[in-house]
Amino acid sequence: MPNYFYKAVTRDGLTVSDYSDAQDESALIDKLQQDGYIPIEVVLAKSKSFAWLRSNKSAKDRLSSNEVAMFTRELATLTEASLPLDPALTLLMDLSDENGKLYKLVEDVLDRVSGGSNLSDALEAQEGTFTRFYLNMIRAGEAGGSLAQVLRRLSDYLERSKELRDTVTTAMIYPTILLVMALTSLVVLLTFVIPQFTEMFEMAGTELPVSTQIVVSISDWLQSYWWALIASVIIGVNYMRFQLADKEGRYVWDSRFLKMPLVGDLITKVEVTRFSQTLGTLLTNGVPMLSALSIVKETMNNRVIAEKIEVAANSLKEGKELSGPLIESQLFPKMAIQMIKLGEETGKLEEMLEKVATVYDKEVKVAIQRVLSLIEPVLIIGLGILVAGIIVSVLMAILSVNDLAF
Image (cartoon, rainbow, N blue to C red):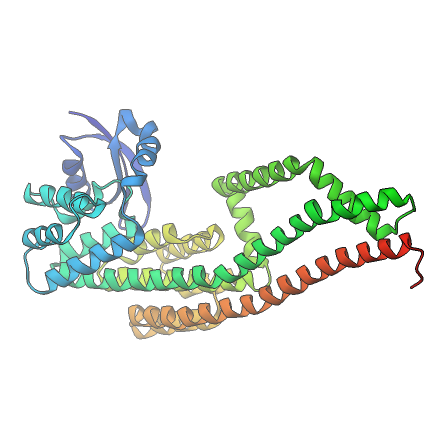
């Protein structure tokens, strides 16, 4: 029998990894579930080191987050109408473009389900398409006989997550355009406009004002060493990518981001919203608290906050409450912690987490507007000062050439 490498989460929230022989991936997944584990990853041992390569090669064939949300919403609607899973998937195929990615995915899922696989196993076989959170939600729904309800909750969760992403993306469009236009304007001024005046200044043979000399020097440097500027940008971007890909480097930068004025507050609120939505959804569907926290930790973008969630999980193992470590972290907003604490005391933690997510979803939108209200005038005023400085330095040089007094 082939040998497989697997990663799984125990009911206590611990992540374990090992090797095991099995007839196929589905058999090993079934065995792990019977032993009380939640499988995260199962691959052939001999191909483990090339898993990332396979994943990259198939990236273009995966569904986008919007397509996953659409698939979930349509499947939820069909199963809520008491339609069995096989006919529901068949109908989804009929509604999809035969040459599209969704059609191919649904076709493969249907083949596996018709062959006796669970929906969760069939979805997990679509490498990299569905998140660990998504798959565990489906498994919880299958175990509890409430797949239709779980699909509906998943659909609502994905819709809220999409709205949050769209809010951030839309809000950044105008500042991005403004920044690009500002940089383009400066480059045009320094590389095309200033050189025209430089020839005139050289012909005059008079000493230029210091400000004009600085502008002319920058213009000359930019014309001669423009490639160095591009190279610096490329090196800087790749350095940041390397830092964010490295575990220790990512932690350092995430810590810095949290300390930034306005930006840190926005990141915290986004992560609190994601934490509350994910944990509330998992707990509502019967996933044990420790396992749920282990999954939630993986959904966090900020490694510092993820570490604090891990501390909270360890605290729970010792019989303490969830809110205690969150208070000690001094990262979560006080109102969010008080609402979570109230939910623990009243036994309505799931409901309170949903309320926290709703409250901070609105707070994120307010925080975004606050950041934008600062970024936009700073960019406009900054561009105005730079352009005005260049124009004034040129005018001063022209006046000095013509021996005019100020």
